[in-house]
Image 1 (cartoon, rainbow, N blue to C red):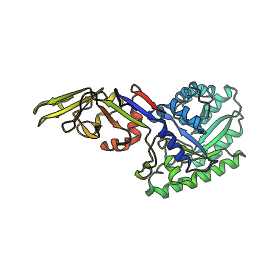
Image 2: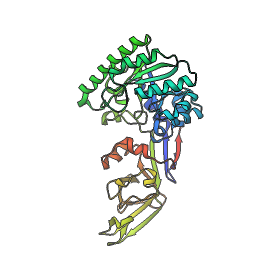
Image 3: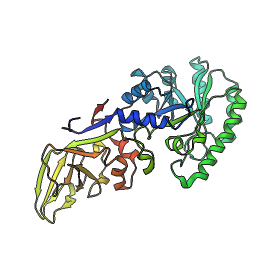
Image 4: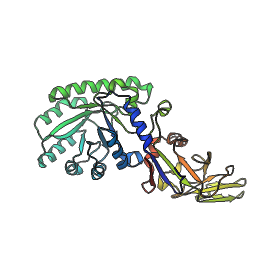
Amino acid sequence: MAKAHETILEIDFRALKHNFEYLKSKIKPKTKFLAVVKAFAYGSDAIEIAKFLENEGVDYFAVAYTDEGVALRDAGITKPILVLHPLPASFKTLIERCLEPSIYSSKVLSEFLEVAAEEKQVNCPIHIKFNTGLNRLGFNSEDVDFILYQLKNSNHVKVKSIFSHLAASEDLNEKVFSKNQIDQFDDISKAMVSGLNYRPILHICNTSGILNYPEAHLDMVRSGIGLYGFGNSKEEDQNLKPIAALKSVISQIHKVTPGESVGYNRAFKAIQPTKTATIPIGHADGLGRQYGKGKGFVTINNQRAYIVGNVCMDMIMVDVTQIDCQEGDEVVIFGKNPNASEFSATVNSISYEIITAVSQRIKRVYKK
């Protein structure tokens, strides 16, 4: 593909296909696959990613909020969509658009049952979320009897799945904790299935759960970060391909003499003759100020150019004193080398943060 002539996020569907097939190879043929496409599909493009994965045979999608699910429905996505954190204010919209809520507390259950009754629903699909150690959202094991009592008194909803979330599945030093979560979920699931008299889909594994706990794949697995090219370990990163590359161009080159400064607050002061390149990407595009003052870097002609001074809203300046380059040359912020994990590690961050921070004002370009 031609080199970038503006700031773009290049999305490679060949890499996405590879990641999907690799993760699918880790599960049994009858185990369902749920693709997590929340937060604009981890900063890429939820609609294009979902369309592609629906054609590839994914079984389910998950989003964080109702509006994200509505956008997928408006784009023609027909597969089931789990809304992981539905808010009561959006329950009617959720029902109208055939979205499926995660029910995680007695308050949310009561409120959804009330709306489902008002909307004259019969067997409206819901998903019951249990907390087994993450302590973020979810019922506790002692809530099983309450849930079953509420559900037996209503034909407005039907449990489509029962699920939980592993807290440290990527950390092999926490195997005892993770296995305890899996065992807890097994006990909860048995109690729920016995009380319901039917078996919903059971799922607990995220990307690292797929890779590290095959015994816990159950009826369905969920993957977010793995689809986008990251396996939460150096070993698994080798088996996956980052789907997104953030690129830009050199707008202008400056020669800075000793004593001169660069950028706001004069955060960089030259002590020797320095050549800097200005690049049209800044903290409004997702490149936070923490990357400034020599911490973060970009790649120009296969060489690292470190950010000098503060990151501006729409621009950064980098040191290209030792790099043969000119205005208009392509700049890689992250892609395959360095990938988002390596780039974010310069400020002790993680790939999730930088890829989901990429602004929607940045043009998306697709390699299909």
